[in-house]
Length: 66
Image (cartoon, rainbow, N blue to C red; front, top):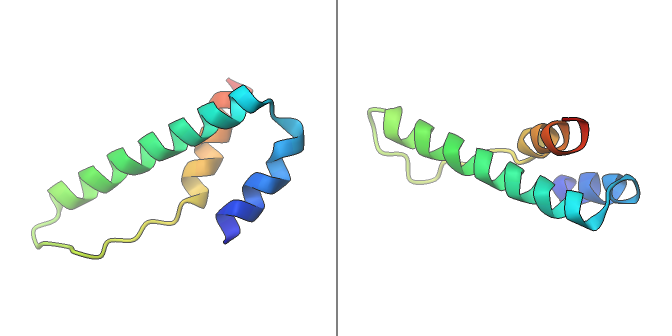
């Protein structure tokens, strides 16, 4: 639920295109991180859960400020 609240806080300052790019970049970085963690660990992790807020923040940094 915190992810949604964070996005709702950022929406007034972002255009619809920036929001779409932000979600794309955040999802892509989270997917890459998940794949790297799951492939580099020695034992099988069935329920790996990653917090999404750091990826949203990274996406905001990339999309809005760069």
